[in-house]
Length: 133
Image (cartoon, helix red, strand yellow):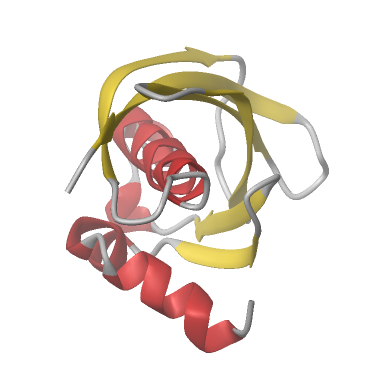
């Protein structure tokens, strides 16, 4: 995929655009993206807000599911669970999403959330419904 294609994937989700989600690479097997730390995305103490962390995971995971859909179908998140392991106080939050299961009616995606040094910030598992046109 080209950089233009990456931007088109994010453009499908206006909230992800306003949050600042960036796609680094995208295929049906793996989607990588990031969100830069910024003070307006933080809670007390300069910690990246959990909602921002979850929004990045949901956005990157949704793109992974989207890239695994059959022709003409679309998707929606029906379940998401995030474990938080450490705070992010600077740099960027990186997300790596991979499909766990691609079925006829749902797609399960796993997303690793990492800091700039590759330390795990969190982990999200989500289920996406496969919706026919």
